[in-house]
Amino acid sequence: MDTPRRERVGVREVALAAGVSLGTVSHYLNTPDRVSEEKRARIQAAIDELGFVRNSAAGQLRNGRNALIGYLAPEISTPYFGVVSEGVERRASEIGYSVLIASSHGDLDREVSYLDMFEQQRVQGILVAARHDIEEKLADIRERGIPSVLVSRQARTTDQPSVTVDDVRGGELVGEHLLRTGRRRIAFIGGPFAIRQVAERFAGLQQAMRSVPTSSIEVIDSPNRSLEDGVRIGRMLADRPASERPDAVFAVNDLLAMGVMQALVSEGSTRVPEDLAVVGYDDVPFAAASVIPLTSVRATRAGYGEAAFDLLFEQMTAGQRPTATSSHLVFQPELFVRASSAPIA
Image (cartoon, rainbow, N blue to C red; front, side):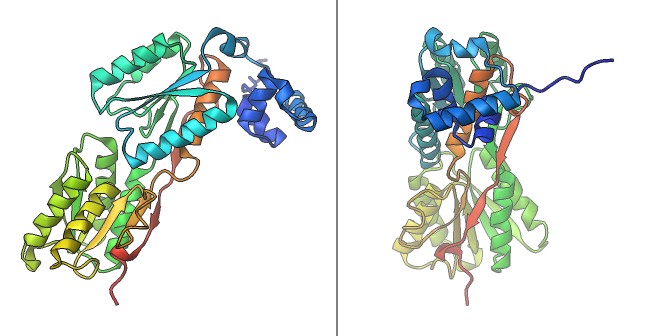
């Protein structure tokens, strides 16, 4: 009779059982003198109880490669990816790793080129927020011993771990909120729809608005998704007759939303939220502090970047094959309602 196969126990399970962080387990395995005697005892007890066996290749990572990971994002300068990169860097530094950060600007050739560069630099793992489907490229790199995690894009296969946000639900939250406050003519500002986050946020808005047949959506293209684009679109909306204006705007990010509000406030003829409600996405740190506090969806709450690194670290310590707990982490968004879309008394 076949003996049931026991699932591989990873450092995550050891950390949970011992009540310590992944970084503390890493220090115990690599530099035990940096861990207190009491925590060493707890970690060893967890190792004994769970039957953790350290992967020999993982144990030699520091000796064979740089204590370095690569992080590739499309737009490092945006608040969204800035928050993610800070979380990644914070967690990496806790364990003694450095992060090599690159920006692809959404260009496929740059994505491939930077992945090649990371491999040449002998990084131990790669975090990738890609605009394009590069899973085959990542699979090839994984076969050569470097694991990776997709960030803000759900992987197609179980062999490719990923961390993402349920952006369909995020768009649905916005639509439900605006409908509850009596808004019926909603302008969706964003683009291009080839970007997964844009398409999914729009799909969520559509899903919510199906519940009110008299509601409508106007799509206003904004491929740059910048503050300047928001100002331009806000001025365009202010110039319309009131009967032809939407009564709400859902901007695909906070920069666009704040640009729209800036234009409307300066023009003076369209009041926010009395005439036009405004909702953004990402809940960047200064959204709540704008002249009219901005309603926004928080997509990357505290711990998102850290979770991406933790998942990558788990792959790094497990060898080339993904661990049983890897698969895909999906974070749920939250809507923070503020003055820019508050109900009108």
